[in-house]
Amino acid sequence: MTRDLRAFQTQSRPGTMTRFGQPLARQMPESQPIPVTPLVSARGLIKQYDGRLVVDHVNLDVMPGECFGLLGPNGAGKTTTLRMLLGLTPPDGGELTVLGEPIPARAREARTRIGVVPQFDNLDPDFTVRENLTTYASYFGLRGETLSRRVEELIEFANLRGRESVPIQALSGGMKRRLTLARALINAPELVVLDEPTTGLDPQARHHIWQRLRMLLSRGTTLIITTHYMEEAERLCDRLAIIDQGRVVACDTPRALIRAHIEPHVLELSGHAATVWLDAQGNVSDIARLHRVGDASLLYSHDPRPLLDRLDSDGLRYLHRPANLEDVFLKLTGHDLRD
Amino acid sequence: MSPSLRFVHVWRRNLRVWRKILIPSILGNFGEPVLYLLAFGYGFGMLVGDLGDMPYMVFLASGIICSSAMFTASFEGMYSAYTRMEVQQTWSAMLGAPLTVADIVFGEVAWAATKGLMSAGAILVVAAVLGLVADARALLALPVLLVTGFTFGACAMVVTAFSKSYDFFLYYFTLAITPMLLLSGVFFPLEQFPAPVQTLAYLLPLAHSVELVRPLLTGGIPTQVLLHLAVIAVYGVAGLMIATIFIRRRLVR
Ligand SMILES: Nc1ncnc2c1ncn2[C@@H]1O[C@H](COP(=O)(O)OP(=O)(O)O)[C@@H](O)[C@H]1O
Ligand SMILES: [Mg+2]
Image (cartoon, rainbow over all chains, first blue to last red; front, top):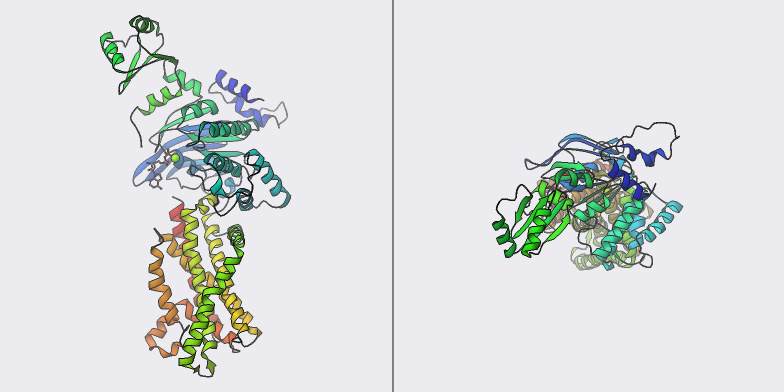
């Protein structure tokens, strides 16, 4: 099944689980109905730091073969949630199963089948590119033929051919990130967990990572990815959980989230002239939902034609665009700035 | 959670790095302690003469060998381990793989012991060349030196577990390692100290290491072997357990 088809099914049947069974079903006899169990399942997951709930009763189900996103502002609890999935942070409450293993009790066993891309690169500065891969492979007990074949494959995958013997310090940010991703694949993991994989990268480097992640998805690997880039979430993720202050405030496909929370048309106005114009319009609440952020205004509407006519006849500059994930995100997590 | 055989992966990672800088590493092993041996040996030797029927150089050699295992393992368990824990985040990368804190701490202590053994072994070679070693039973000192390195590596990791910066390690050197060096029969015989100081020295591990190694290097047979080994082992095992608990508390939270 191609990636496009999967995306299509996501949109056509939001909320159903049938599609998630597909990668599994290919290996099974045709006629048998397969009950699809989540690869990751969290129930009432809690984490407290200094008496403050940073992960607050989180429920998650990640299905085999999907790309699941955790979208939230800084400090929302994304990293803490991922660390709990990996058994690197002990939860203060709730139940957690990853790849059929209870976490944190059997986290080590689970981690033999997981790949990890941490938020901050922790490549080994004492080693070259290739040595980083071989050393990391050795932590999994890989050796001999398997090890050298994997390492060569991953050097190709990371597009680092010709740089195998270069020390880590000589790599650009994008190359380091690619190597970190390659390193996460050394154990041929069923699940790859990525914490802000493209934060701080330039657009080319970011597209390169996205392309690699789509490649993984087409092979049936399950991905869990945290991000605060809407674009990344919208492009990559089959389903998203929007997290704010430790709580899942919404969870669905990107399209379903937009449909459920935001009017389909958005008008963006900004500047003094726009403010004056808006004030002169009086109450527009029957036509659009108005949201002001500083001197910018957003008008959300099901039918913006009356507004568009008035804007055009008054000669105002505006941007008319379809609603996107960012609108959902801002609506659900508030417009105020987070550190 | 107790360490598994996977600690070997941690040990081997450090060995790989060490091999990359093989020549300076080995020179470092020989350099400083050999300087100590020659300077103190010839310098003091003139003043002190023989201790009983033992030339001072012969007495000193076994002391320097033990203290070298102590210093090398302590450095590795503090400065190097701290660098891997905090600066390089080597351990956090390992924790993403199927290694646990117990594996990592045990692997690091085993590596510190190995480095302690290598540096003590280097001086043993020099001492043998200088004719300061009686016979082949000196080889029996090697396992004792490995255990000594393990114990000091483990104790150093306890300090590392609580360190907020490199500065903290100086306290440990000043308050624990240096007094131990001076009180444990490395430079002068323990019997010269007042009884309470001797008791204190025997409550610490280094004196027991010296008591085992010195006879083995001078053609004698150590007495109370099990007692000496037991004291060293208690520090080693306790250090390992405490370091594991507190490093876990630091990293897994
Ligand atoms: N080890 C810790 N000790 C105390 N507070 C922490 C710790 N780790 C995270 N926090 C706090 O928990 C909250 C969530 O952090 P995090 O999961 O890193 O958020 P995100 O990854 O979404 O930016 C933040 O307020 C952060 O300061
Ligand atoms: Mg984070």
